[in-house]
Image 1 (cartoon, rainbow, N blue to C red):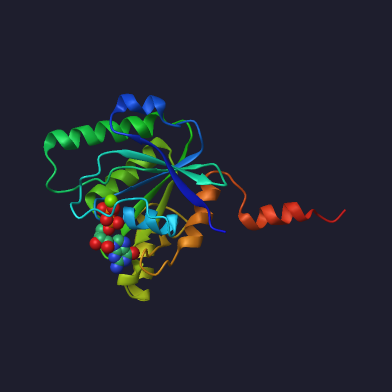
Image 2 (image 1 turned 180 degrees about the vertical axis):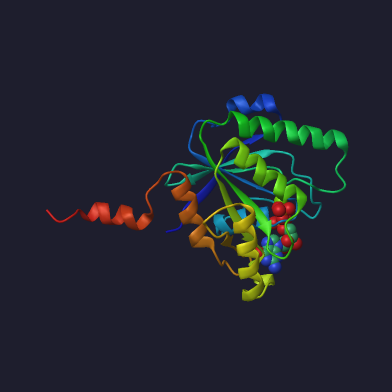
Length: 210
Ligand SMILES: Nc1nc2c(ncn2[C@@H]2O[C@H](COP(=O)(O)OP(=O)(O)O)[C@@H](O)[C@H]2O)c(=O)[nH]1
Ligand SMILES: [Mg+2]
């Protein structure tokens, strides 16, 4: 059975972060507005639709904490960045909230950075990636909308990001439309939270050879 998601906390202001489950193991999801973050969360949630796929992008200004059952870690949905029609004041509020979260969450294990597989690396994506590197927070790159690109373009995009991120791990290919990458994403999320892969857990329950 795939894990299930339950929304347990929504935070609008830095002060409200006090009441959020920041100590529990968690992976945050970040990406530019319209990258497909809500669609990805809904795909992970399965039949239970959770994140509103907005007709008016850039409207989500909250941080949403989803508990993953039965594993017990959290997926933390950060507001999308870089929506063009956001005011300066809005943008400053956004930055304050996200920066406070990223700096103050002891349980933060990694940030899944969602990147549009159709687009060349964007300045804001590069900023997020270099901020994570400087902060020592592991980045888990996810190329979204993979159904929109040819295998050849996807492979090229993967190696481009791998080089940019100075990583040995290829970005994960994901499509909310086809479901491609869903299982691999669950696996990487668990690994990021230091939880054994489901297969390993099964082996352990079976017991080793005496
Ligand atoms: N073809 C395709 N379209 C997608 C995919 N994921 C999202 N979209 C579309 O991209 C747009 C933005 O998606 P949304 O999930 O709201 O992005 P968000 O702003 O990052 O939350 C919507 O029109 C979605 O239908 C995908 O995997 N494949
Ligand atoms: Mg959204």
